[in-house]
Length: 522
Image 1 (cartoon, rainbow, N blue to C red):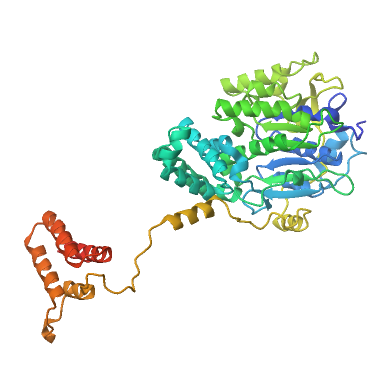
Image 2: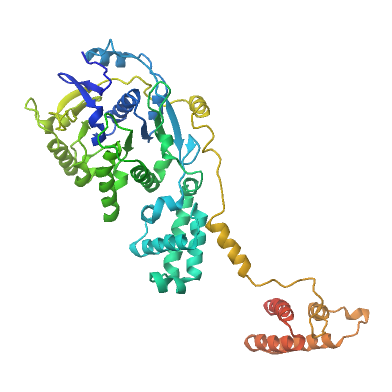
């Protein structure tokens, strides 16, 4: 009979109980399988096992049904039947996990934000799909912002910084290299696309405090942080970049702990293929580095995806704990995926792994976890245990209640907009702008009646017997000239004669505007 023990998580039963050792859970893992084969339930079982063991969890809810982990399950026939089949009937209890809901858009959970500076130029370039030249310009923008003491907190700060670079390109490129207006314009356009995808909600303050993802309850259970990702999946590049940023932040912030008795945090990366699709070499190297080194910070990373081919070999080799649900071999690529999955397991003499992968039923999986000495166990055909929490989503009312009673409170619910690059550069532009003419000022020093000229040009009421003043005669003569010359010559003639007659920058500005309208009318 399987037992629930403090140092391991019960996953299911093959010919014996299958466990995931907590002391080796930070060696990372992989959960794969075709759609509808039970990956989400396996993720739910693992997340609840970590939570019960006092390990905080972060996971993305791509389809919306993982949110049910926040509510206790119900005694349904198929769940009770599975528990009895695997000898788990006496131990099987229903219960919810302590849960915090998050949402980059702030609609289905507490908002998650970071600043542009914390994201950095490499990930931001990936997010905006910039080429190498544009990424170089973006890197220069970050460097100049640092030297000028300009905070880059949100997207409007970055836009203002790019505008500053375009205006000062000559000075900047003399020190850092070529900065063209074309490259700056391309980055600005990609910023607009990012805003339209909702990226402006992600950048700003208050920024996420990593410690808030690592909370435990007063009774010692780990909080399960569920990211609402159903809407976020419409912007897959934003989703992948955010999760990679989060991993990078954990790597930078957390101290070294070696191999703890249990992880400090477990991170589930659902739809993992989005992280690696079309990723440049520099980004893949960063992912590989983080996956290799973050385990020493006490963080376990579990990739969840449909196909093991979605994960590069350099990363796949770091994943010691594996759960493989059924794969379908309809195409040559599918057949290759089956072979790759089979070859990554330690063989079991009782069956041929490659054949079994295509025969697994829903809720059944091939399981291989690390044994006490760090060696993968022989792969076992395993019935996954039923979850204790609800299968399926929470209701909107339940979600609102959980958010309202969250230990996070209102710490992230209100945006803060402090002084940063946008405000500072805006003041500089205003200070350097030429003074606007005072509309209430008296006539210019030449002494001419500008108002009289305007009145004459717009038409003087001769029926009232008004007499032309000297300045009105000038305007009358100019108007006659307009009617007798071709358009190309008369514009230059008018500008010279009238501006020369009345003098002053204000007069020239007014007359150009009025005469321009006359020319267009004629």
